[in-house]
Image 1 (tube, rainbow, N blue to C red):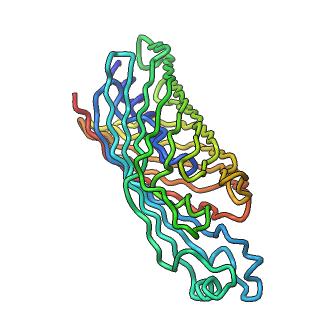
Image 2 (image 1 turned 135 degrees about the vertical axis):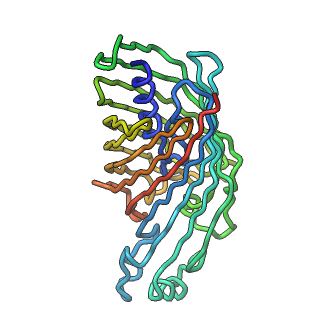
Length: 318
């Protein structure tokens, strides 16, 4: 019976492991419950729109669809249990941001009097800011069998290191900082994860708050708040396990700060739906997920999220 509980909690951790664009960090936990583990996760996020005011180009009839961005994040994720109740997590991301635009948009941007820092097809890539998180298990109430109610709570915090490239050119628009792999700032994370399970159904709720600081170019990303809730169901396939899950995610960000003023085309909130599928085979786990926005309330003008796809693999080391 204990094995069923362990595998159920494994799923909850894997579904929580999403990359958040507002905070550029890995918010979830590694799939393997109470095991030292190593995982690799890859996400692709598509956007449409621009930080430029399209009213400036009304004479050529440009729309959000004329401006596209694809952002990919590949994350190396490690988890170590220092004690049965103390969990240490390290995440190292590699980020690629590719911007493109229609032929009409490219011509309008190049001919516009304000100019444009960048060209169609521009790509930025590099190692992002590593994140280290420490969590303490506040309680772990386990039922006597698989039909009993069980719940578990982790809480703690982390530190993001300014390793990734973040510097902009002398004439660059400050909004271009959102496309850089790094932030140039030391940021602090407060987070908690609640897990509950009864029979073959479970619930996972994660929440985090990122406190940002200003980098040496007088730029500061707004503080970020994220919360998500996911429900799942356990299916057994011979000696393997399959876990479908659905959920809802909320990401909020305050306005960014450049120099001595806030940037009006930054910050806001996104509410989106999540559907995931996880498969477990011995020490390996594989996961797929798809996310799409339900509602976006962003301070315009800035690109809006179209969809996000995630794939990952993890291995338990002990």
